[in-house]
Image (cartoon, rainbow over the protein chains, first blue to last red):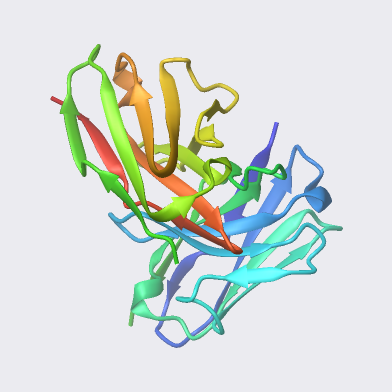
Length: 120
Length: 108
C-alpha cells in the first residue's frame, strides 16, 4: 500500500533554513509527480509546491517562491523541500502528497506530516 | 487566480441527517479539476471525491459530489459518527492548486 513518511521538521529561528524529506513506498515513485501542502495551526490547507515525476518542472505558491525549493531523488524514492529564509508565517504542518497521475489533477495519498515551527 | 469559497463555515447536524456543503469558484472552472477532501482532528486529509463527482477508492456511497461551472456541492446523505470532520474543496488551474477554507461538520 502507498506510504508517505515525512521527516525533518522542528523548531527553527526566523531567517534560518530547514530541509524536509518524504520517504515514499508502495508505488512506482519515479512515475508520479509529488506535492507539498502545508497547514498552519488551526487553519486550512495551503498548496506549497509540485515537482514533475522526472524532476523536470517545479511550480511554487507565490508565498514561498524564491525561498523554498522542491526536489526529488528517484533512486531513493524520496521527496525533499528546502526551506530557506524562514518566517513566522511558515509555521505549519507540512504534508507531502502523491499526485494522482490522471487527468483529474488531485492528490490521492497524503503523508502524516512533519511540523515546522519558526520562532526565536 | 481562482478563489474557492466554501459555505457554510460550520454545519451543526445530528447523526442520520443530510449534510449539504457548497464550494463556489470565483470564475468558471473545469469540473474535472475539482476534488473534495475530509480531514479529522490530528490526521492528514483524505481524498473523497475527484472530478467533481467520482468517489475515490474506499469512499462510502453516502458521499456524493456534483456541480459545474462555479458551483459545486458535496452531499453526505446520512451522517455517520465518523463523518464529523472538516471538508475542503480543491481546484487545479494553470500549474497552481488552491483549496477552499473548509467547512466543519460538527455534532449538534
